[in-house]
Amino acid sequence: MTEPPLSSGRGLARRRHHLVRLALLTLGWTMLVLGLVGGLLPFIQGWPFGVAGAVILYVESRWFQRKVRRWRQNHPRAERVWLKLKVWRHGRKKPRPSSGLPVPPPDGTG
Image (cartoon, rainbow, N blue to C red; front, side, top):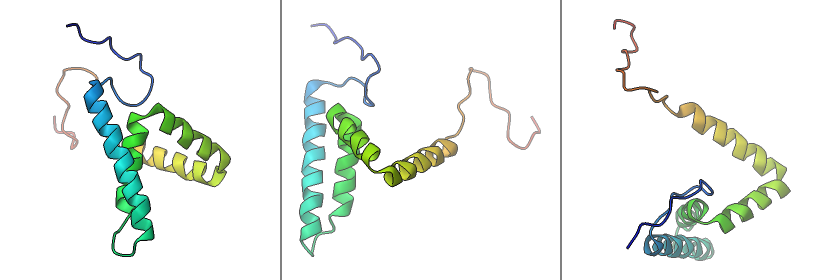
């Protein structure tokens, strides 16, 4: 049996086996529903489950990405917060060396 062709770069997730993708989508929806139910019940903290489910679905589902994008477009304040978080996250990334050469130590002795 041959491997499926590589993804064309659309979406956030790399191409996965269909059973892995199905498991991730099921886990994401289950956690999102558990988060919503946890918001209604006083003895379950629902927000961690809701956030984790939304993150899994955002990475794995193009449909969910489109829904989030439309929601952000309709809520400009949320869009500003989203962009600030994106800039903050990219500012924290450590630069990767572009070649196989060793990186000099940061104190300048090398």
